[in-house]
Amino acid sequence: TYSFDVALSESRYSNYYTKLQDRKLNIICPSGTDFSDPSVQKTIWVIIEKYLRSEAKLILPDMVKLLAGEKSLSYNDVKINKSTSRWGSCSSRGNINLSYKCLLLPEHLISFIILHELCHTVEMNHGEKFWQLLDNVTGGKARALTRELKVFSLSYI
Image 1 (cartoon, rainbow, N blue to C red):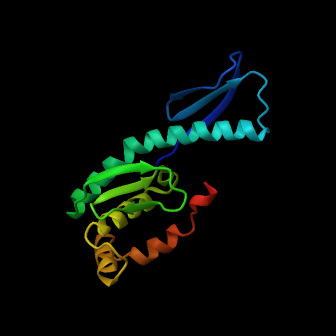
Image 2 (cartoon, one colour):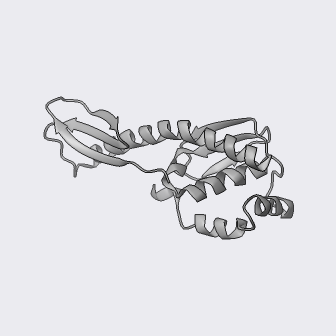
Image 3 (cartoon, rainbow, N blue to C red):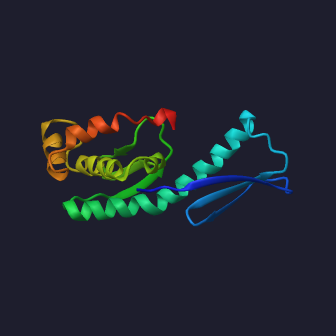
């Protein structure tokens, strides 16, 4: 499971700075920062999003490559985006798009999203053949994992 801590601190500087050390994202804020201020909270969230996106670009393409190899599925390319409506998508050219927000999910659901999109490289719809293929690559758990994923919402992240 992917996880990291966030620590907020203040410094004498007038700008925000970040430092990643031992799976901890340290966000150093200007002295006197009012953490209850909505604009400060937005700034901190933007910093966290930037970090997550950067990490997703390092982690998710490797996961796609590994799972594609294990399941003998192919794809063209992987892109990381900031989708607020879908965890992932697959183009007719075999390009897989994944939201960086996938990193906030349990690892088995990240794998499921990737497998779902890899199956779309074979079946571009959600017909019976698609579900059979997805069931095959998930050990018969496609519907259960779909239900489990629905508990999580991109709109709250």
